[in-house]
Length: 384
Image 1 (spheres, rainbow, N blue to C red):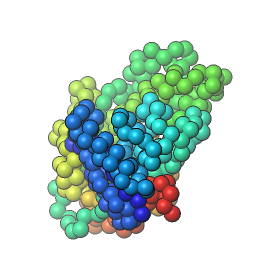
Image 2 (image 1 turned 180 degrees about the horizontal axis):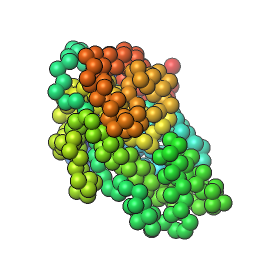
Image 3 (image 1 turned 30 degrees about the vertical axis):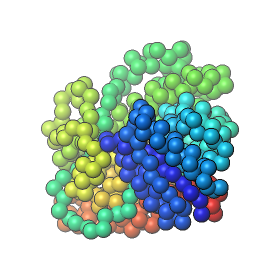
Image 4 (image 1 turned 120 degrees about the horizontal axis):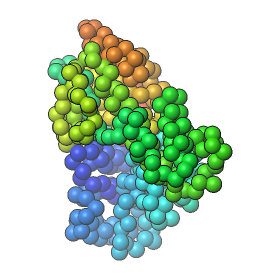
């Protein structure tokens, strides 16, 4: 098997460092000789130079070498690229990282986390291979425990704008009629669960427009406005609707996100990777509202399962390929519609959340760890 280096940033308030470590172990299990290279951030010039020197030595010393990194950010200046193959795990939608994705060298394979993103790449080809690689999680905890003092945990950031009356303000900078297209697209995402790029295509068609007529840059700008908006809208809707259960929030909260913080909600502030995983291990239910990946998932779904929490999440066609809402995880829409009653019922039953978490754990361990995602990388690099 090949020599490989997995590169990540040691970003303490994300789960990316753990992702890099888990992918490294997964590739090792497949027989690759793998090193892990974590650098503090892209501005750490000295560490970055050391990393580039390490990559150059691997290219020089090994006939069979590939590199794995995150989000197409790193340019590896000074590295002679002959003999270097690269897999970049893209953690977000392609329009969020458009500039980085479309300027990487031709020896890069680019992943996407939602199956629907293949439509975007078909319409805007990168000239490079693309492959579906959804979010994953770590190996499940070795020990199972039921001492979980946190009833319901929400882990994530709460940003504005988050209310429908804000939408016109944030789309005002768009050229006409894209502001009205944004309104139609948002309705399609929120009311029909449509994937954002498809929703925008439908929104354009409603005004007799096409992607070609609008052009890529206005389209990217439109997607970058509406996707954070619908995510924040649904998070606000979630956290102001679950009055029948106590919810703990870990993450940053914009000062004007809540008009008045709900009586059942308490906030811990921003937490780092280790604290986030410790919180998930102490929680009975983990809420996950992302909204914009209906053909994929978010890593918190899998990290929560690994940590033994029952998951309450958005509908996802990808998740439903292996897991059933109501048996292996809880429906976020049902929780909102019931004012939190479905969650309160699970919490009140002696084995409610425990049975749900146990039911998901075995399927998760068999299909959705980063060790499984590492196989996608290995195949993409040419190792069946």
